[in-house]
Image: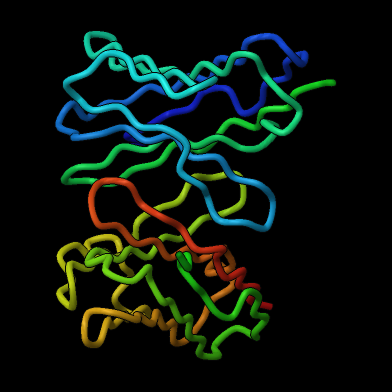
Length: 109
Length: 111
């Protein structure tokens, strides 16, 4: 049973528009949720995090929203750029460490 | 600042052979993780170290996998004997707080 789910394996967005990547989880006992970006043949790179006590965290073009009642979080990228094309993983950290299966984002120039 | 270093980057072995992966974490990071990532999946935690102590190895297949972190710095992950299903990318990560820094991974192919 997957603890963290990313139900959209892929997403295509036009350059300049908003990209929204979603993540659902089952375990409420976490400290942080983290978003990672992964290019081919490289390890995941940390992008942005959100604490379990927050509902929003913003860093430049990246904003993560946490809805604890729905056990759902989303990553918004505005405006999307071609260099954002990568696989994005959400992961929870605390007593347990689980990652989703990833969403492949393609930003079309 | 140097990132997490892993070697080798790629390894091809025949089934039933042993294989070992090496990881050098970021200096000062006391927590070290080994993950396995299968194609189309997210990283799955195999083992987590706090300094030299393995604090979570519940997902490590102990019949064939072993790991060590001598002196609480470098770590090695070993598979003996390897099976076809072990083909995956093995990622090492380290952290000081909650943010994990990943190495580039070792892509293992078992034939």
